[in-house]
Image (cartoon, rainbow, N blue to C red; front, top):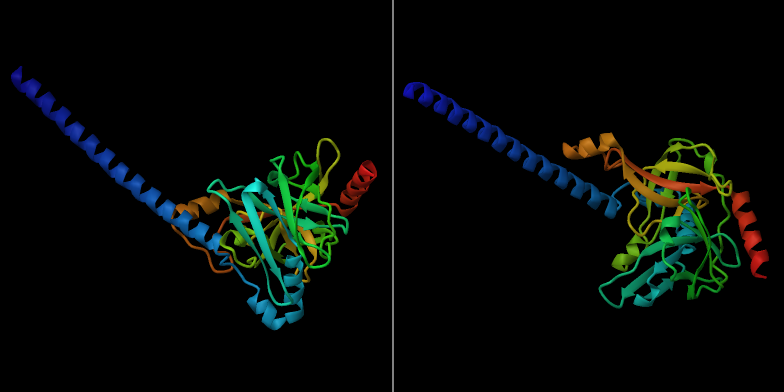
Length: 308
């Protein structure tokens, strides 16, 4: 009897040791996997933050006119601030240089995004998720190349489309005309811009990329908004939302909305597989919202008539 009990006890102890060993191995694997995943995600975030994708340097060397057109387009982009009372903005615009410098008055920083002028009387497009606060300030260069700092009014905000129309009492520097984003095709080279660089008090960083795909025209359930979505691989960063998606000629085709990662890209990150320079993080997607120009201008005309 004692021998049987001892045998069962030995088996139990052995099983516990095996189980403990398995748990230890799984724990090490999990920690190691999380470490690899975390390192990969850190690398990918750094790549996106530093915009280490295709730059405009080669384009500017080979096609200087296009390079100048894009730089000029960026100088027309406004800076949209929430919690505006907590910040002060300085700006510089010359023939060869342009930048914003944002200084926050305390540690509770507000939100920073971009807005794109589309009319000479102060209507701007931005992303809907950039206008969540009642207090908005628009900072931009006016037609006389002076930096102005004015309250912004939300005219319209999309419920399904990540798009908003705002207005400020100013005459912006050379507003954009909207091009047809649905005419873009996979592989078309595009450029993104925004104000993530203002966080570091630098000139706006620019990055080039390629269109991945374009959706068909979409409508909100209300029937108000008409837009299409453009997926691209130009690296977006916080602060770029609401900024322009540009053609190589500096034409406006969309408004930067969000970035995301495909399921396969997450697994490649988990395994620590780096992408090539042209696509630094495989599985990354940037998204821009491209509104129908006729619909946007009808909305502008309706607001003008309402406030007269």
